[in-house]
Image (cartoon, rainbow, N blue to C red; front, top):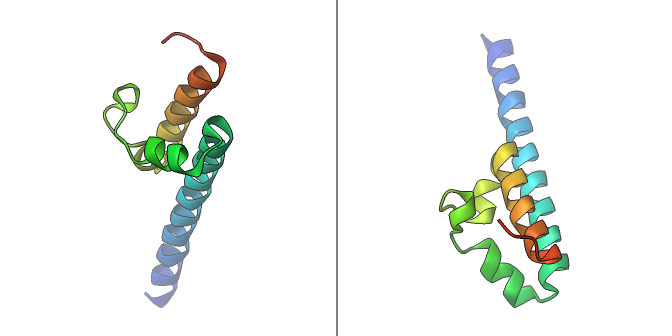
Length: 82
């Protein structure tokens, strides 16, 4: 029983670590795109319709959500249409 609990803890911490990495990556991209900490923070914490109404940081909790947030920022950076 103890061994099973230990493996569950490892899996949960790995998931949290992956989420932290994705959120940090999305935040770093936002910093480069917006070149302003205030603008970047505003974008990251504002619900966006192209990400299902979630904030980019909330979306970054999943791999697919992080990709959606990155795609939105790429379109902003390169002035691409939806």
